[in-house]
Amino acid sequence: MILSNSILLYKILKSYYVNKQDSILTQYQDNSKNLFNYISNKFSQVFILNSKYLINQVKNKSKHQEKNNKLIAQNFWKVIFNKYLQEIVYLSPSNFLSKIYIDKLNGINLSINKKDEYIIFLDKFSRKLVSGNIPIFSNIKNDRLISLFNIDNIFFLKYNWLKIFNCKLFILQNCFNNWYFQLKKKIDIRKKQSLLIFILINNKNEMILSESFQEFNQSNNLLDLNSEIIKKNISLKKKYLGLVFINPKDGLEYQKYINSKYCSSTSYDKIQLVSINMNFYLRFLNFRIPNFELRLIPDLKEISNLIYTYKKFNNLFLDKYQNIGKHHFQGQPIYIIKSIEAKSKKNNYSKIFNYLLCHNKDNYSNKNQILFLNYKTAINAWKKNIEKNKNYYLPIRPFIHVLNLETFLKTSYYRKNNNKIIFVPSVETYKFIKEYFKLDIYNSKNTYYLILNHINYIKTFCHRVIWYLTSQ
Image (cartoon, rainbow, N blue to C red; front, top):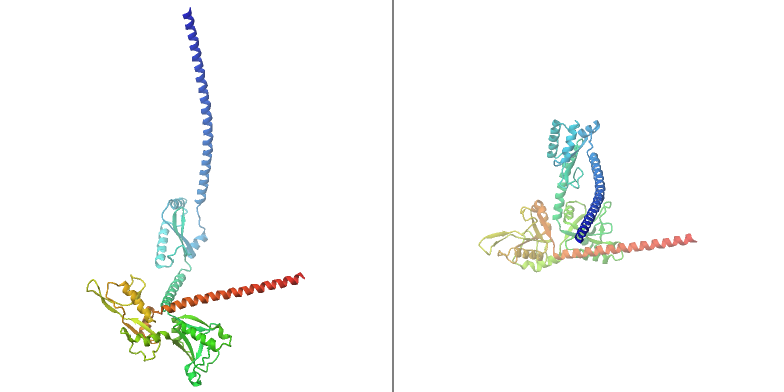
C-alpha cells in the first residue's frame, strides 16, 4: 500500500515537472519570437531608410550627370565664328568623360568634325602651333591666350585660337620680340657700365654749371665760381663747364664752397649731390652744345697717392701715351691687372691667369674685364684670387697697367668691347654712397613728416575757426 502510494506520488510529480518545463519552454519560444520580430522590424525600418537615402543619392547623381552630359549643339553663326574668327580648342589626355561625350555626339550624328574634317583640323592646328601663329609662353598660368586647368585631376589646355588677327598678331609679336631683345641688350650694357659718377643739381633738377677757367683768366678772378643753370632759351655768351665727379667727397666739397660763397642767396641752399650712370656721361660727350663743356673731375686723393707713392712700385707700368709728371697726372687713373703665367705647386704645369669676371662658371665665353679706379681695391681683389688658386705660385703684387679713363673711353678697344667692361671704384666710395643716400632718405622722410604735421595743425586750426563762427 505504501509502495503504491509512493509510485503514484512520483508519477504525479513527474507529470507536473514535465508540464512546467513545457510551459517554460513554450513561453521562452514565444518571447524569442517576439524579440526576433521586433529586431526584424527595426532592421527593416533602418534598411528602408538607408535604401531611400541611397535611391535619392543615385537620383541626384544621375541628375548631376545628366546636367554635365548635356550635348552642345552649334548653330550656323557659331560654326562661321569658329571657322573664320576665333576658335577655342581644348587639348587633354584621353579620359572616360571625353570618350563618353564623343560617343554620344557620334551616336546622334551631331559630331562637330567628321573624320576627314578632324584630320584637316589637326593638320592646320599643328602647323599653326609649329609656325608660332598660336603663341605659347612658358608661364602658362599668367598667359591669356593659353591656360591650364584641372578638373577632377584631369589636366587639359585651353587655346584661344585667333584667326582673323592671326597674321597681324604674329607680325606684331615678332616686332615686339625684336624690340624687347634690343632693349634688353641695351639694359645689360648699361648695367655693366655700372660706374656711378656725381653731379650737382638745383631744386629743378637742372645741372649746376661753372664758368670756364679761360674766363677766370680773362677776368683775373680765379676763385670766382659763378654757378649757372642750363637754359635753352638763353644764348650763353661765355663758355661754361659741367663738372662731373668721380669721388663723391670732392663733389660735396664743391657744394660746400658754393654754399659758403653764396650764403646770402636762398637758391643755393637747395643744391644737392646726385649720382648718375656712366652712360649719361658718354652720351653727353657726343652732344655738341655751343659754349658748353663737360669736364670729368678725377679722384684727387687717388692721384696724390699715385704720384707720390704708387709710382715708385715696380709692378706698375704707366701707359706710354700717359701725360704724367713729378707733380701731376692727367685724367682719372684706371688700373688693369695684366695676365700672369704661374706654375702649379704639384707639378710643372703652368697656367695663364687673366683677371676676368665670369658670371656663369659653365660659360667661359661670357667674361668681363675689370678696370679698377683705385690701386688698393685692385690689390685686395688680387689677394682673393690668390686664395682661390693656392695650388699655383702667384705673386703677391700683380703687374698693373696704368692709364687714364678719358683716353681709354676714346679707344677703339672700348668702343668694340664696352659691353664686356666693368669699372670698379674704391670700397670707400661704395661705403660713402651707402651712408650718404641712407641719410638723404632719412632726411626726406623727416621733412615729409614735418610738412604733414604742419598741414594737420593748419587743418585743425581752420576747423576750430569754422566751428567758432558757426556756433556764434
